[in-house]
View (cartoon, rainbow, N blue to C red):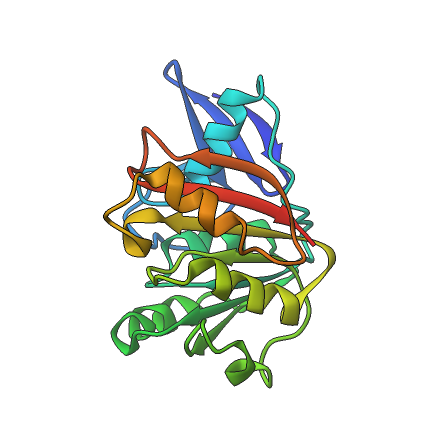
Length: 223
């Protein structure tokens, strides 16, 4: 097996002629049934839009990694944490930092809390991403805001959180679910309209997540 670092904290593995993405686990045990190979934790891009984005960007850029602005000690605000599949890999990428994991569903939060028992760098936040002021007592300035929520006003939510918590020069990654915004319009029209609503942010990347996810677009912007 050969390995190389794609971006800080995420790696490419060549296994049996296939290229796989992985992280180095900062805690023992499987989170969602993923495999472990020689000290790496395989990252399934069909179950994680961030993994899909990193692989898609590499394919379109001639092998270059997407700069997320992360270091081992970075702080991340993760909006739409769900049960923690992608959160756990972000946790691996910032072993000396913190991931503030915001989730609205009490049912998903129960599973997320179990994950936090073994990962000291995840701070679970039961809250509404559309109301960033409601968790201001728990969240500090961060290097990355990552958003994956199924609400109509996704760009507005991203802007409000970036304005409040993202440091100057920091990165926003918005996983846009176009069908959650408007099912009557073509996806390209939806994301074009939403991008215009990202105030005080400079968009650097926009790409669909095919073949891993349908009707999802990743928007990367800097503050």
